[in-house]
Image 1 (cartoon, one colour):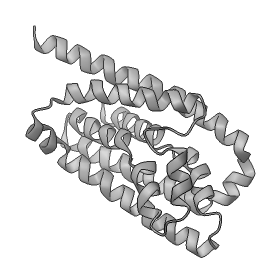
Image 2 (cartoon, helix red, strand yellow; image 1 turned 135 degrees about the horizontal axis):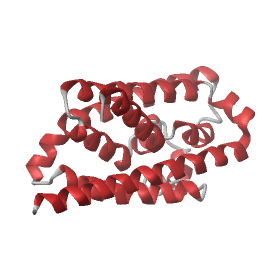
Image 3 (cartoon, rainbow, N blue to C red; image 1 turned 60 degrees about the vertical axis):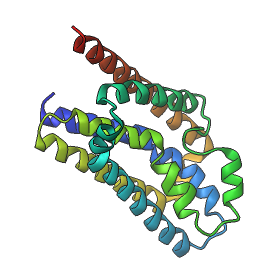
Length: 210
């Protein structure tokens, strides 16, 4: 895969799993009682923290895998299965159980640190996002492609920040139905990427025994 194709692949994969447009619905519900300034300040803190978490695992992911003796292909297969379950929930227009449950959303309404939990973690950087950045870094064939993963992470969270800042306008424009349609489309795209993760991982594991 050349550098441009890898950048597009990395960004599209991360954008699909983070799915900031779908996250707007949850973000709006959690910040409905806040003023505009309070909402934007919370958006800044939550997206920055999510970005830091993603970058941390992108840098340290290989070390963590080596420590536990896990191959990148094993993570591809496990991560692909996880991403497919997330995609299945998205195609049914449901809040993914991998990210956050309805019960957690309701309980979070009473807490003051919702920018940490559940918005930064796990809404924006859940297990699926963490797995994806580690796999993408493991898939990078050169230093340039490794840097492109960081570019893809940055682009994804910059878009998330903009969407959260304009979340109320976007929600009014698209409406709940529009959000559900977008969520289903992202779910379909993510399901295809999950199958690719699983197929690539299984094939590499099989060839390693040849």
